[in-house]
Length: 350
Figure 1: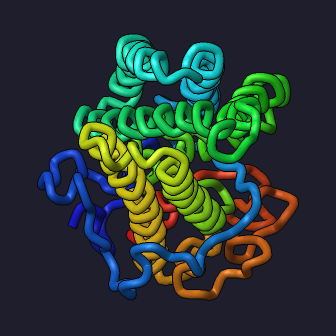
Figure 2: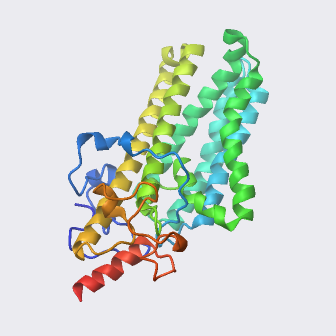
Figure 3: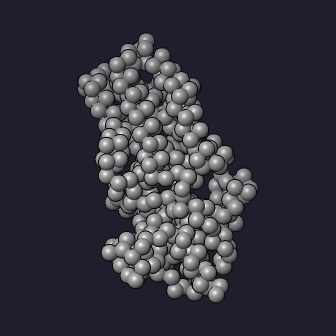
């Protein structure tokens, strides 16, 4: 199993709950196995969806911090804004959209993707997961570009709507995320806790960082929110494809376009399910940590949540709301799940 076995050593701060997952088999790296028994429908646990914010650091992770995650989000979403504007200005005609698509992908592949990949490899260091993540991002951004170019060309012709409606649809989400992250996030330190989840849901960091979204309090809440975000991303991609095909049947009749759309959907679903699986393994990991020390740990609430004992209103065990969900009211300093796990395992060994 890629995760530590029950009673084994917890990872050091900054390490993944997978422990030596980089040395696991390629099959485990591409699709890790659960470390506990789960019902089949937990592959896509829709019953865990939670519609709210969950402010989380990367647990003990000093390589990709909150500000780095925010900067990468601005990079990916800002580049989408530029392509949306470029496509609207130059790609609304039948004889120009293919050229705009080509040059957009040249920009993504020649500038954004190398910069993104370079930061990932330098900061994260996991070459295999960085490669999988960047390939998924490239197919996603390519499918997104094709879809918005269809909106610009076909909305006036098929539905009688101005092309500006397509611009609002294409530009709205990335512009909102870019402005929110760059303006409010960097001006208000408390908002930076939103950066990691936003970076994961927007493909701005390696997929394996789903293992590290654990906070002093809301391990369970972050899982539930990421299920919602991953399901939204996959559903939005399918909806966009459906609309694009209705407006322009050539998107499936032309083999080259069809292949590009299919790869977009496959990688989007894969990234969503992989991220959910990472969170489930992280929850199982901390449930093992709790059991290893006799079930007396009441700090992170992850094991209790996976057993259905957590209070859904606060996402964890017996917390004092005034201290952000640490080990209890007597310890006002928030701790990460990794640190708590190490402390409790040491107590159990003693």
